[in-house]
Structure formats: C-alpha cells, structure tokens
Length: 154
Length: 182
Image (cartoon, rainbow over all chains, first blue to last red; front, side, top):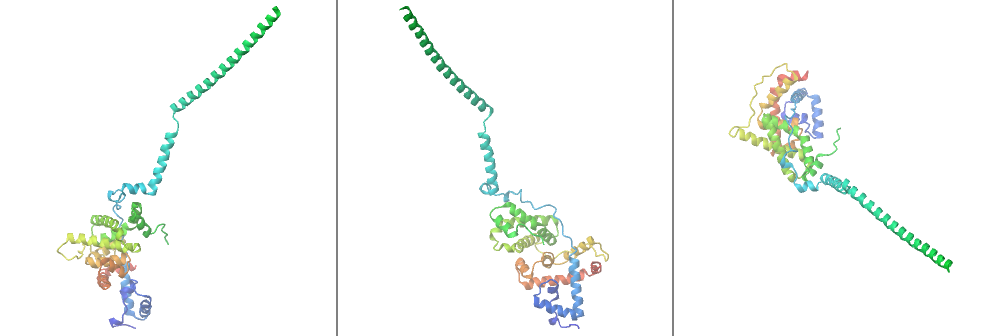
C-alpha cells in the first residue's frame, strides 16, 4: 500500500517526536505497517533525530557563581533568624558562658586562701576556748589547795 | 530511576524564603542545560556563560512571580529565551536573526566528534527561531504547548518552525546518515 494524498498521511514529525495522542498514534502505527513510502519517510526522520542526538553537550567553562555573589547573600536579620545560624550562635554562646563561668588559677588560689584562713580562724577560736577552760580549771585547782591548806593550818 | 532527595518545588519554596543554598542547588541542577541551550543559540561560549549568569540572577529575583513551581523549567527557559534574543538583537540589530553557515565541510566518513561538529554546523544554518525550536524539542524535551509558552507564540507557529527546521536538517544531515546508521 502507498499513500499519495497528503491529507490522509499521519503527522509523521509529530509521530517521531512523540506528540501524537494515543488514538492518533495507533492509527499512525497501523498506516505505517502497510505504507512503504511513509515507512521510508519515518525512517529518514528517525535517522535525522539520531544524527542530531550525536551533538555533544558541553561542560560549563566555570560554574555559575552565586555563593560568593553579594546580591544573593541574605540580609543580617535573615542570617540571625535562620535555624542553622541560630543553632551555631547558641553553641558559641554556650561555650563563651561556660568559659566565663569556669574558675581561673587566680580564682582558685583566692578560694584556697580564703578557706585556709577560715580553718585557721576556727582553730584559733577553739584553742582560745581550750585555754580559757584550762585557765578556769587551774584556778579551781589552786583554790582547792589554798582552801585545804587553810583548813590544815587551823 | 534516580530518586531526588529534594524536589525542585521544595527548593523553590525555600529559595523564596531567602535560602540561598536551596537556590544554589537549583542552579547546579539546571545550569548545564541552560548553558548548552544558550550556547547553541548565541554560538559563543563567553556570551552563553554571561547570559546563563543573567538568567539565574533574573530567575532568583523573579521567583516570587512564579505562580506554579511545577512549571519551573518552562519558566526558566522562557527567561533564557528572552535574554538570548535580547543579546542577539543587540549584536545584530538590523539583520534578520538567521544563523550563519559555519565553515566546516561535511565529511562522509566522520568520527563521533566530527559528527557532532557537523550537527552543530547544520544547526548553525537554521534561523535562530528554527534552531531554538529544535533545541527546545529535541535537546530539552519540551512538549509543543510548553514550547508555545516559552516562546510566547501559538502551537501552530512552534510546529511550523520545528517542521521546517527538521526538513532542512534532514537534507543537510543526509550525508551523515550512513555514518550514523553504521
């Protein structure tokens, strides 16, 4: 079978470009199976598309630069309110606070001195109490002997 | 099937909220396709690169105007089309935007790279409108109605440009068919 009337021919370019709807595609397939002229036309179109597909896609000489482009940088408040920046800020803050709360060597020395002076003051107080008690006992003992000596004399 | 962790519409939504990294990822997905499309249109690597840069800048600035993120690719190529033809008009204001024939002669026994060059030459012989129709359909895979939106013209015009281009290419590439078929 061959076809000579252009009106009866399917749209072969749309066919090879996959632009026909399913019904038109089925009709075109049926026609193609019986028409040698159209078969040859479709083969040539496919060959043309195959040849076009050999065109190599080029790599870009350099990437499109946006990261370093000022136009694309977010404003300061966008940085502050971005989740990643806020999380980073929180961690950095925690490190600073932690660092500031951690005692330095001078603070440690001062604390030790203070604790030692407190211990010494407590010891001094305890010794003073002990001496006062010994003093009282000594006076009591002395009074006892004085009283007994007087009684012996009489 | 390649599974993308984040789809383009998600990246577009993030970019609209000022997420530059999301937009950078979007650029990295599309830059090569846009660059190659522009390269075939303007026929100059530096120009293609400059215009690509402009395209992605304009796209970023116009993202809030994109009604349907699912149609990002057509919208992006529409910007690329406008930028490319703006450049072509600046360079050739008085002449019809026809492609200039390239000097390379067609050799009946071509290596793959030579075949690629021959195709480039054949594309260069088409008018800019015809060439663009081939680029959008054959290399970028857009449907007729999407092409009509990108080019802002009726589908009938798209088909007319593309079909004429295919007839011309069929003739100019005929010497290579034997090579391709082998």
